[in-house]
Image (cartoon, rainbow, N blue to C red; front, top):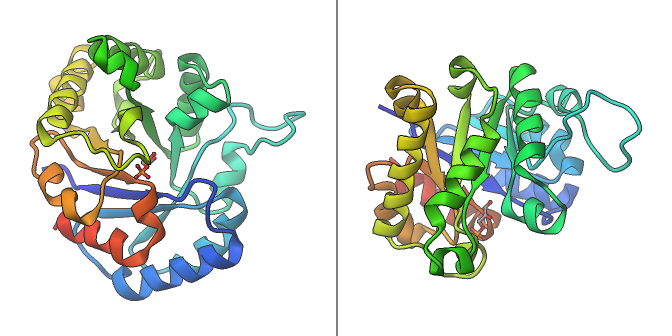
Length: 251
Ligand code: 13P
């Protein structure tokens, strides 16, 4: 039985003080909540503050990206060891916004996944097709390339420390959610890919989150699908009650 994982990707929202306020509200209202694993992914700047606020609660800390080198002349970047020192357990990698705005490729995602796993942290690997790709019928081949690229050279043991987030790009921040059937179809396809790359055991243990306009109102139905094991939440993670509504839908 896979434990649901509900992660809030706060993106470039919530500076230190807003992040502190939101994290405090979440600790008060859901800090002892049992059920889905709960992860907050604030901006780098707010990681230390959020770590302090959620200490001792059931909420966990995640980051939105990481660089693949240990340290050095990489202006603007943050290393995995820095994230670890800040108390991060999960790192989101390969988000479609990184891919479309900042030149992320399957190769850079793969280097980052390796670095994150080598440090003993867990990777949330994001994949998903654009609207144009869906309409031209290439969703499965796009997702296959992304999954195979991200997991190249990753052992089965390490793969178990990853989560995959299926985020159809056309559903992100648009209010358009993939239907339960559309999402389940791709999730099942991804699980099949993991079986082919590794084994039935790995495929059955890796959790696959859905992301893209997930809200309290649609979370229950999405989470009810066989291969949907959680959510990666953008907009609805910025309001405590909405995020908690989604967590409750996973109980
Ligand atoms: P929204 O929930 O705002 O659609 O964002 C999804 C997402 O990109 C999470 O990583």
